[in-house]
Length: 330
Ligand code: ADP
Image (cartoon, rainbow, N blue to C red; front, side, top):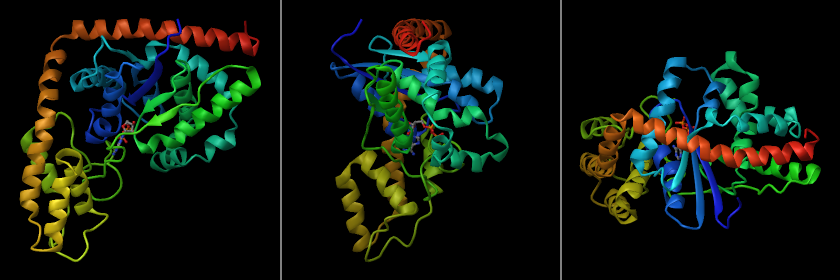
């Protein structure tokens, strides 16, 4: 079963439609590795992880399929990558339980990502939330994956996965790799509000992959700016967010020109926003066209999801069997 390719695993939770942060920080990296022959790529929808924060049952049922549509629309190809739903491969949750026996409660409770989520939803500080990183480690290691294309905010979770790999290898003689993050230029896409990162959970912070040109313009119009002139270009706030997006969609040269204008004759934000909106839409338009095609063909989607589950499970089963043997369960 083993081949010489390096394995890659990534996933996105099924909490809504994808935004530019997900696209630039995660999906672009997934695409790059999918299209490199040295790698074998598996990409899932982290639907089980969606249960770690409050959610609506019918929405989850819908979004877990929608994220697959988003993946394919963005260029993930079921002939090149294994595309699947996490819940279809129960070996992930099984392995997560075995892994939880080598992780201390204190380590999990002190994780900043856990504390942040508890602050957001104090009434929902569940065992599932505490176990989030353990399940994520199982997602990755059940495929012995060494590379994980995700945004920079996921680094603490990858550190846990590496710790678990080391502990399992030391205590039970397994041969898990220590997974590394695969970073993209858009590993941190700032919020349109000018504060923090672009995120589904912050209204006004994001541009969705499904937004049309008018919506993109409207969203950019809301980014807070300043007088457009000064001795130093702001390194945070709305202006910094805009310049970062210019870099990502129009290149560093375009950004430098705006920066130069800022420190000399002055920068006209209306022009910047107009041409940035066009550049973003140009990249999104083909994705939106492809999305509409697959959204109208639910049989094809079913087939992609079923084939993906079968391929993923064949690999996952081998790992779980080996772990059970080594832990005395077989
Ligand atoms: P959100 O914070 O909007 O709920 P998720 O937590 O579901 O997004 O993230 C899914 C993937 O997208 C992860 O790999 C994450 O690192 C990446 N990601 C999310 N937001 C950003 C961002 N603003 N910049 C870069 N990557 C991001």
